[in-house]
Image 1 (cartoon, rainbow, N blue to C red):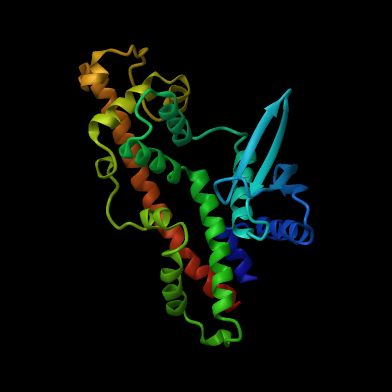
Image 2 (cartoon, rainbow, N blue to C red):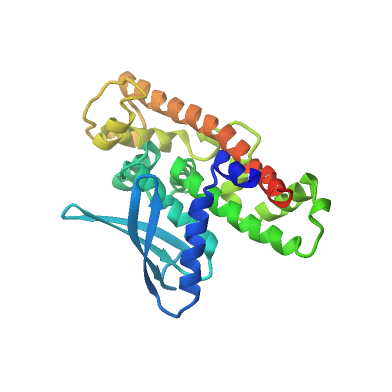
Length: 290
């Protein structure tokens, strides 16, 4: 019982995992490529589809579509045996349902980049999009849930036939350090980085300032950040200033405010994500000693 309590305490939903395992039994038991399932959470029963296809360029993704006041949820999965990815995408669906589809400031900021006319091939811009992606709480929660499941499978194979009483926290920590080197490497190495986060390590200031100016002119961004910051609202008119990275004092003041907000928020997330990631050691130890 202690093991189940620890799941919920540390952010891993055992109920969600059980539901996903039941989906996988059906998916693996047939050659069909299209499935209809029902997902249950505190808000009710929610129907969704799973499509198996090898034509996608990733392990899987979640899609939400609204038409005529009807919302449909679909998960695309490359490998029908990949329970970790299915759990990851169901976690995204759960997060979306619980938040009524409201997008975070990090997702809105990603969209602002896509709408801007900055070079999409810039390494710095791609780094920025990746940072905004992995520090979105929705993404961390999904990665954490699927990482736990994959690590559980990894350990079960290692500890098969071993006396559980001989398994120590140090054993699990050692195996976790090896496991995490291959699991979503860049993401978790960034979460576990010991140093403070700073944009300058990922993107040139001139590129970042230009992107943030686009943020300020984005209506969705303004709505999202209004509860966090108070800043001068003005309609941005493209001019030589963005080309030369020369801004009015008011513009530069607001650019620096938003930059400071994100750096501060990411550093808070960094500490939280580190602590939660290492809690899988406790979860696993409790599993084997329950």
